[in-house]
Amino acid sequence: MIVVSSTGIRGLEDAIRRQPEIARKAAQFAVNDTIEWSRVRIKAGILQQVAVPADSITPARFGITRRAKPNALEAALSASNQGLGLIRFVTSPRVARAKSPTVRIKPGGAAVKMERAFLIPTPKAPGSFALAVRAPGGLAKSRAARRIPGTNVYILSGPSPNQLLANIAPSLLPAIQTRLQQEYARQFERLSRG
Image (cartoon, rainbow, N blue to C red; front, side):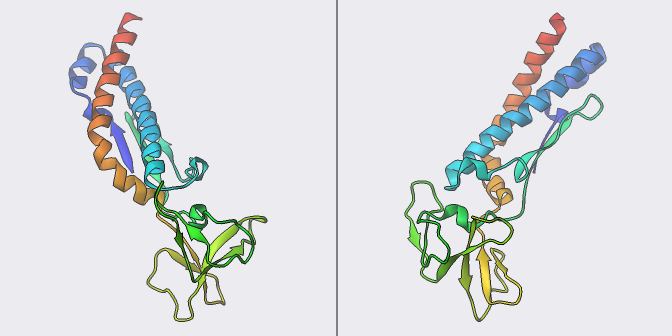
């Protein structure tokens, strides 16, 4: 989770003492604009990190969960902990019971043939598939595999949006802080002119 807060704005306390209404409104706009700017940059970073279609990173999986309000000058960007289905990384044709599909995780990286894997139709979404593997001994310690009840078949998952966010966010934090400060100055100037 990324939180953008007005506490990161230099000079805000002084501005609130001099022009409280304008300073708070400028901070609210700056925080909301910065969280949206961050969302776009981080999503682009995620898509550079893993080879998934852009529509795989939906607002439900990665999006703004809280926006700043005049009395709460803080916004949040959250990401799901549920792994992306490994089917999203399959590069070979997606047909029922296809054996040994090829998978590409990194954009431009090598496609790897998964010898023991196969595709199974998903009952909840007709026409779509899941990447699975049969594991008679079980995959109990795997966080990237979900067992189909009553079988020894496991549906495989890739990284979660939250894992991808955690990889990208630290490198973007200085740019987010700079953007917040610049956006506050711009909004304060704009609102001061009336």
